[in-house]
Length: 240
Image 1 (cartoon, rainbow, N blue to C red):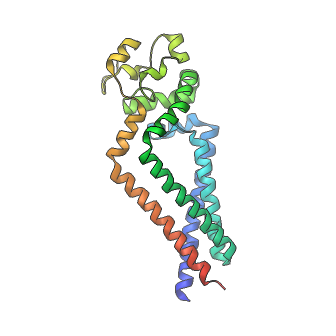
Image 2 (image 1 turned 30 degrees about the vertical axis):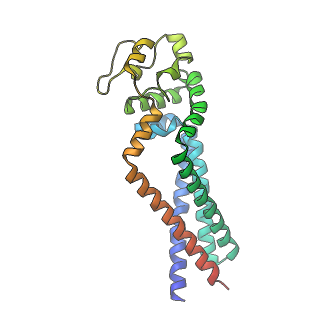
């Protein structure tokens, strides 16, 4: 009986933390969606590497909403000893766990396919918005300068862009060596000769270089999810 009470309290506290984290992510997501420029000013290049691939605001809102709901279900289920709520908590967590495993497998096995899919999304956005949509341009400039890369694949992503067509030059990072920021106009010939790598490949390279850290975080998250599922099932099975 004492063990049951201890596990119940620990599940409540754990899910209270998840609930608060979800609320914080929701708040940040709304902030990014409403005022992305100020978000970039506060977090700088730390936030830029992912923002060119997804709308971070909506992503954070979605992630925050899921954590918010999960935390609420976990807290309420543990506190009220409601079997229906505990089963709902377990089911949602199981779906998320399976989706994460599937996503990891797809990312590892079908990296080329993922690159092609992202190219279809990102390159048209570069062609349309770079140089004309302030937040989008700031994100890309920050990313290219920090990672010493050019475009999503390479400089050719800008060939059909409004920016190049109207200004007859490419973004400076497409012609720059690391630590040597050029001030000369970046023409197509110069960008071609510099052979600056695309940002997608550079990000993949950095992820692989930190594979142990990334893998450790992934394993830690998976372990927490499994523990939460086991605890919720323990409470469920021991309730009358």
